[in-house]
Amino acid sequence: MSKLVKAAGAVLWRTGSAGNEIAVVHRPHYDDWSLPKGKLDPGETSPVAAVRELTEETGYDAVLGRFLTTVEYSVNGSAKTVDYFTARPVAGEFTPNEEVDELRWLPMDEARSLLTYEGDRDVCSRAEELPVDTATVLLVRHAKAGNRQDWEGDDDLRPLSDAGRRQASALRPMLRAFRPQAVYSAPRLRCVQTVRELASDIRREVHLEPLMSEETYWNDPEAGTRALLATARAHTTSVVCSQGGVIPDLLDTLASRDGITLTRKLTGEVPSKKGSVWVLSFDTGAAETRLVAAHYLPSALPAPAHL
Image (cartoon, rainbow, N blue to C red):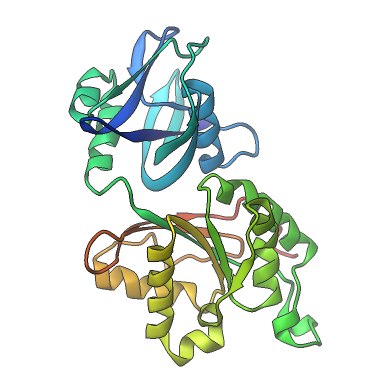
């Protein structure tokens, strides 16, 4: 069986004098023009790899936005997949290096004409389908907290297990790839603990949002939906940590309302494993904020099932 090679990249965009432009790079080793991309390092997630490769190939520090697509192809007999996101530069500049000797900022049509590979051109077309400046909400299910039956105290105070703390630590670099500006959590200790270190990383407090807890959400699901939409309008990127009894219904409600197809399990249920993330992209420029894309990221560090 051939080895699966995983990679990640991005459509890096900025607003130029003639409108939005994207970065295309020339790789002298292959003598091709491509979108910035590269292989995942061991233990690395696609969002982290995409940001790292952008820095290495273009010189720009970037913030990820919407997930675009996964491109699959074969290289020297091995299957390869590349996860693509949109991304926006926040600092840095291009300097020629061993991997990339030239970078061009071009309008989308010109960039598409220059790109060597059909797959890259298809990614650009996918990026054009929706606004590139969508707002991102990273909807996180709290990490593992042991069995409820084994906890004798107040369930609100049930803490993360050792496996859960490892999951929460692995989440931090993946969430930072999107450069969140605010962190919200259901008022459960295990939810707060899942995102507390991330909040510290970005020098923010964890804002408690009761509508993201199971009991309060189900008292008024419409209010919970309005709360998430308000969060999307308030920040370019935010993190919201909730529970397994909330996330599937909340996503089903938004997807049904806005005509979005969600990744589902074979049972038809919306996946929401502990320590997982839904990357939700919202168009906030219209009169009504609407969900335009949703992508599921499994736990960055799956814990053994018995823990």
